[in-house]
Length: 304
Image (tube, rainbow, N blue to C red; front, top):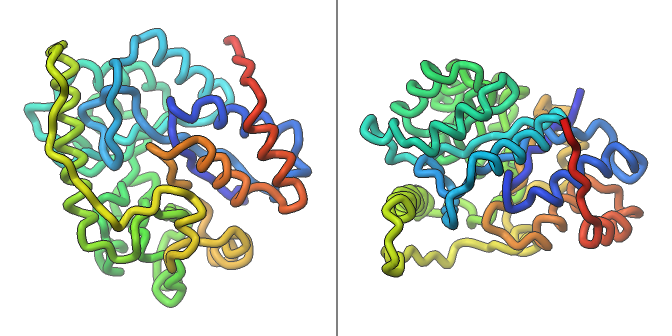
């Protein structure tokens, strides 16, 4: 059985994600056994349907998207679009950029994370080769609700982070092989503003996508969402009871039947992302070496 890690971010962490894949191939003795990069998640800027974290910037060109998708896919790594904006309705389904991203990745390998039922239905109908994943943004916290979600036609269901380390509850979860655990959540446990934050992010993403489309020269303005409950630096998350330790993955979760583990890290500094990769996947005696290698190495691209 593979231990599947799902990594951030398709674009911003491209170099370190590809490098990690190459190190797993060339230096397997440095890593815990049976590790696999099962997907890399995120979006291309600026996707209106994006959710979970805001992502602005200059809209990606077609050839850039094709090359990024190719570099992951040629290595057998699925790209997982985070189309988890909860505000997507029927009038947003004709967005040309998001549809282009789906067309370019519609090869049977790539995946989509969803929240909006309208968007989910649209993708299933028009892009049937994508594996569909239920987002943690749905915040399903009761066992009956989770069981109902797992009975649906999802490739994976990403659990709410508050399930972490509640082993009495996790034992009751069916289809553990189809559950994905967010192992280093940056939100404090039981954050009461999490839903509100996700909704704000969705509105922000739609606003910035429209702003970029208009080509306005005026500064982009949107109401801020300030939250003191987020700990963005990796080692700050370790103090939370929802933090999953690396030894627990291998000694507790995997023996229970869980196979999929998501590392948070979109909108996080690359140094923090590298640290999370080393912490979870590298044997302690090799961590300094792999950490240094990931900070200084260049990625060599593969041609089709």
